[in-house]
Image (cartoon, rainbow, N blue to C red; front, side):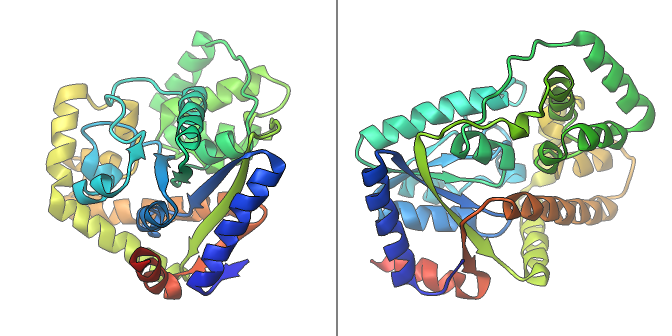
Length: 320
């Protein structure tokens, strides 16, 4: 459903809060959408208008020392409303989907108990669904033999070969994981291989009543926003940030196989030119945005905010 007017958006949220009370559930707003669509701006505007706090659902913004590449909110934005799970871990710390579900669930409860509205903001589909659909995550023990097997396949044939295995075993999980995030890909294969159903199909009754809001840009405009954001990241020092991370943690760090760091890392290793790295970064990000859109398309009852109305809606929400 499409939201065209700010009063309509405010009424939708007000009705959602009342319905949550009636159902005796915690009200939750989920601001979702592809990278560079404007989720941060919308989340902050809503938090200010409805006395909310933001819980980040971004699998990269959770890490420290990756501010430019992960596109975290600015210092000004972070000081405007309370944000959680940003700069939360060191880049070499392990943080599983189960960890996110546990920690973010506790934060949502705390925000609600404080009389504020919890707002989940991010583009990591697995993170969003793990909370809003209450994934019943399987207790899957680490399988070192399986991990070694797929690591060797990746070394021999490339990350994409391993990713294709996940696409066969659990297509929905594959949509939410970048092919170069090898550790997450192998872990998803591990879970799907050891359980009767893929993790993405196991849901429980949610303690939350979730209102999904997505910013809907025409594809060409979304791609322009992606390219503009990448230009800004390069100008802000993404190359230098990547170099420092590589020197400190090494090339095999899982968080450095994600968008931007992977391509700039290839440049720093002398494998491609900077121009080629930027072009590849743009291409891979566009492809990632397509996967995000496919993922979120499967969520029922999503309210869509048109990109053409986005700036006006943000301005009107922020002025009240």
